[in-house]
Length: 158
Image (cartoon, rainbow, N blue to C red):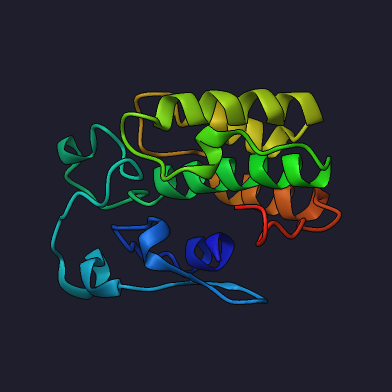
């Protein structure tokens, strides 16, 4: 879903778990009514999946990078725990809020470093920065998809 979205070149503006529908085979991004491309409004997205300084950016370019990297980082960590048949830490199982995001990213970063998931680790380290733009995001998503032997099913785990 993230790669499909990045390839369109459009800006959604409010990527969060609340705007993603999961089926057995794919994820679909919904609620495009907040899209910059659709109507030019500059809403600030759903915390914590919106960059903390987003309101300072006037251009919509790369506004979705932070949300995509944040969600991808957390989901990758959950998948790695599930693949290893390890208990998924509660911080990754609960709803992520702006108050718990830093700790969730820290736990995810530790797991990504442990398993050597370099693409997601780079995303995790980048989202801690002050910029919304993640230079290599599309390439990192492609790298993550290419190196992932299979996505572990975690439906029953969360």
